[in-house]
Amino acid sequence: MRDFARSDSPDVQRQLDRLGALSVPQGRLGLDTIRSLLARLGDPHKRLPPTFHVAGTNGKGSTCAFLRAMLEAEGYRVHVTTSPHLVRYNERIRLAGELISDERLAAVLEEVLDASADLAPSFFEVTIAAAFTEFARVPADACVVEVGLGGRFDATNVLEPDVLAACGITALGIDHERFLLAPDTGVPEDPIARIAFEKAGIAKRGVPLVTLCETYPEIARYAIAAVAVKNGAISREIDPSVVERLSRKDLGLPGAHQHWNAALAVAMLASQDRLTVSDAAIERGLARTEWPARLHRLSKGALVGNREVWLDGGHNRSAGEMLAEHFRGQRIHLILGMLEAKDPQALIDPLAGSIASLTAVPVPGHDHHGPDAFGQADRAATDLPEAMAALPMDALPVLIAGSLYLAGEVLRLNGELPD
Image (cartoon, rainbow, N blue to C red):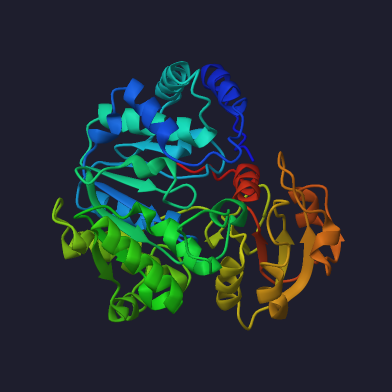
């Protein structure tokens, strides 16, 4: 599946058209292509400021947001690369605190695409090469890098110990089975152990590897520990008392699950010695953290009007369980759109006790489930404005969920562009 992207800048759009034409590398695993591409670009990944590398199934983006907020509260300039984008491709590359400009983005994409013409790279490999190229050029004090898919064979996993300050693994769950559970030799057979094994592939010699072991099944803990030992990483586990302490604080991101993501980010900072971050900066950063489309209450706008509307891009069962916990004891109107490759019951089953109505919507520009896949859908709408207009005029909150691509459309329609 490709990440379709559009831009109002003609120069950027020309490069995005080239990017969108890249074929998806079916069955290709490994880091040879991204390493060859980066070599042609002067190996920018070897010239980055202290870098925090985050893998996991759920919570990667939130953990990266907490890290960025705490580092910036200390006064550091921070580069960030996360995925996917919600509205604009520029969101994937943040330079010293600001989204990359259209001018710089068009230039670096052209440079990377020209350099990779005979390598047949993926969309994500080009994106990471562009991000690392800019990170090496623009002065900053730290980098925060989110793994795209898995860890072991993810394009970001070219990062080496010399630049890494700390690595972290967020919550684990079954997702992206076609890629992460593909047959291979020398890997765990149990699905969740295999997922853990793939995520732990970011572990590097002499670099702290911080995990949420308290939340993992025992077989997943063993898998991570084995990879950490083999790779020579310095294993660190979250102290549950830290999570308890953070649960009594006002974090910038709502939801009990965010206490774990915040604790992971705090522990990653504490585990490393490359940058000093004060307790005061940690407190300020945690309170100020923002991360759109992750249990995000929308502002009044063109799409939602004055209703209480929540937005979440979660699409797997772990995300469904998190949402169920947040809305426990409440009735909600659920507007749901999911990619065809995702389990259509992943959110419905955990939320079943809270759903007052269920409206199925398409995910624009992507292959998606039709209303029949959701079983109990009360209605189907052709788009989000129609779905919102058809809801009963009551005081129940609305949850729009199922896909980050759908979430991007919600933000665009409501006039809340991520910046």
